[in-house]
Length: 367
Ligand code: DOR
Ligand code: ZN
View 1 (cartoon, rainbow, N blue to C red):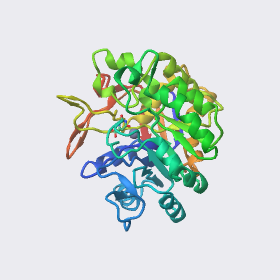
View 2 (cartoon, helix red, strand yellow):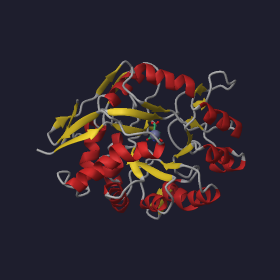
View 3 (cartoon, protein in one colour):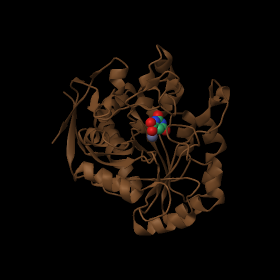
View 4 (cartoon, protein in one colour):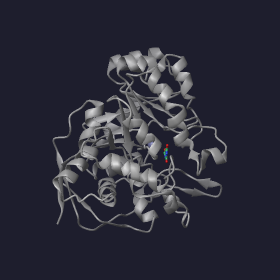
């Protein structure tokens, strides 16, 4: 039986939300061997200021980070909360936040482009007001949701392009040229265009990849409209998935790493639409292992196991500048079952259950 003993890993893009279910979402991360998280700031209100004392109508990194650490009860050795970039973000905020050590990253949301992204502002705003310049100078990472916003339906998604390819063709090269030393994480990338962009940049640009984008294509979503697979950016085409698979499984990969974008919603489908987000808490390493196998990797071989460890456990910490975990966990190639997560606000359906494939090929054991 194949068994992979690995350092605990870091989920460098996850939504743990707020209020009562937050503790359950954090426990779901800990139960799958997470040594730390980068927790998304699209709460209500968003995490749009660094310090509690700042007179702005947002949550602070100080407050949100403390809440996460309280629920994690010592289980996380790294918690990064990026600052949500809003109309109120200034270069001074970046400088003071970075100096204090609290501000490690900022998050760009395309305005109205995804869940709780209404406080987002166009990318150009932060080029014009000196925010990106300050981030570049202070070594603060830009976590970027790379989709063009405000597009009509056919520009948003059709067979000649989509919001993500448009963003990586039209916006990212200009951003990179204007701020060549800015640390950028191209988040939850889904397209061959994004992979190509990231590969063509220096060491200061990296990307996260989710399990669902390694495993599925848009055909899996629309065949029977499997709305549990509806997330943003959308799953794409086979050639995109192939580019992602090649990027993450390459033995010399040091730019692509795990960030699940696990995004729990207790209500996914509503009478007038569907909440975007796949929940992969409790089971993400198992799904990533399935993704590597689907890409043709035999995880019983030393090279494939090493590439998997780099993607899941090593590249992310190296990019963000902290050491890999000293604690370990084990994945074995034994069937296990994925189950809904019960929270005080209702049940959350994990992706494989939503796809009526609750049986996983891998099991996870914590030491
Ligand atoms: O699918 C998504 N869900 N994409 C995002 O960008 C946000 C996330 C959420 O917060 O639910
Ligand atoms: Zn996200």
